Image (cartoon, rainbow, N blue to C red; front, top):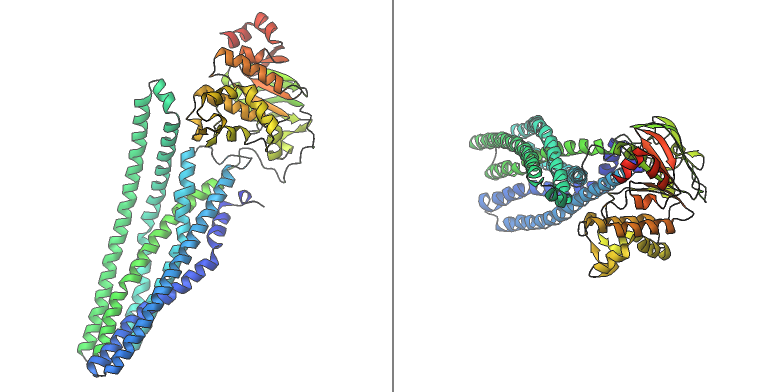
Length: 568
C-alpha cells in the first residue's frame, strides 16, 4: 500500500514516529547533557565547601578537575544530541514532503482542488518543517524534564522542602504552559493558512504577469494581492501576539517560581539547616532551572504550531479523490492498445447523452459552441472526472475499470495551457519519450518547434524557465505540442494546440499532426479550420449534444452553427 492510500494521520505518525532511533539517541544524549548541567552547581558547591569552608586546597583542586571532566562530557553530549534531534526533524519533514508530493501527483487527483499551487508548496515546505520540528521538541522536552528531575533529587538530598517545592511546582508550570498554548495553536493554524494563500496568489500573479499587463488588469491584481497579503500579515501578527503573550506569562510564572525556590533556600541557610556549599548549590540550581523551564515553554509553542500544521497536512493527504480509486487496482491494459474510443450516453457537466465512437487510427475533430462542453469532454477523456450517466470506453473497457497510470499513458489528453518545466527545450520535449530519439526529432519537426530552436541562442539546449515563461505564447504551445506528440500515445487528445501562432505556423502544425499521427487515434478539440481540415471527420457539440457529423468542408458550407463556431 502506497502512502497515498493511507489516512493522513497514519502518514503523520509514521513520518514523525519513524525517527524513533534518532529521537531516542538525541534524547539520551540530551538527558546526559541536562543531568551534567544540573550536577555543575553541586560540584561547585562541593568545591566551595572543601576549599572555602574546610580550607582543603587538594579537595578544591580535585572537585575542580571533576568539574572540568563534566564540562567535556557536556560539550560532547550537547553537540551530538542536537545533531541527532535535528536529523530526526529534517528526516520527518522530508518524509512528509514526499508523501504530499505523492498525494498531489496521484493519478486519481483531488488534492489540488480548491488549493493554489503556491498554497500546496507552502504546506509542503513550512508546514512539513513545523511538523518535523516536533521531533526536536521531543528531544528538548525529554532532556529538560531530566534536568528538572535531577535538580529535584539533588534538592531533596539537601532539603526536603526544597525538593518537594520543585517536584510539585514543575507540573503546575507545565500544565499552565499547555493551557496558555491553546490560543497560539488556533492562531498559528490561521496564520499558516493565510500565508499559504498569499503565496499561492503571488505565484499565480507572477505566472500571469504578461497577460495581466496586456489586458490592463495589473492595478486590480495588485489590489487583490495587497488585500490578501494584509490578511496574512494580520493573522501573523495575531499569532505573534499569542506567542509573545504565552512566552511572557510563562516567563513571569517561571521567575516567581525560581524566586520562591531561592527564598526558601535562603531561609533554610539562615536557620542553619543547610551549609554554605549547599546554599550555593541550591541557588545555582534555581538559576539553572531557568533553562529547562524556558525550554518547556518553547516545547509547548513548537507542539502547538506542529499540531496546527499537522492538521493542514492531513487535510491535503485526506482530500477525496477526483475519481474513485475503486476497491482494488484497475486492470492493466493489453500490451497493444488498438485505440478504439467510445462514449455511450454520457452526461456530465453541460454534456447531455453524448454518443461518439472513434475508430482505431481515425483522426476526429470536435467543435463545441460552448467552452464548457469542451472542458467537460476533456475531463472525462483524461479521467479527471467520471460521467454522471453513461460510460467512456477504450477498446471496449470502461475507463473506470482500468489502471489510472496505464490509462493515461495510453490515452493522453494534452491541454492547450500545459505548463513547461525548468530545463532545456529538448528536455521538455523528451521528458515523456523514454529516451526514444526518433519520435522526439519527428515531434519537434511536426510541431514547428525546430523553428523555435533556431530562434533561441543555444538551440534545443536553451534553458527554459519554470512554466516556460522565458518563451512567447506561441513558442510555448509548439513545445507543448512537441512533447505531446513525442509521447506517441495510442490515443492522443489535443485541445486547441495552435491558438497563439500565426496562420502559416498553424497550417504547418496541422500538416505535421496529420503526418505524425497517421494510423494512430487522434481527437482534436478545436475551432481551428486548419486543424479541422486534416481530420477524417468532425462532430459538432451544440448545447451539450452532438448535432452534426461530417467533413469539415461540408459542415462549414451547410451548418450555420458550425460555421459560426469555426469561422466567426
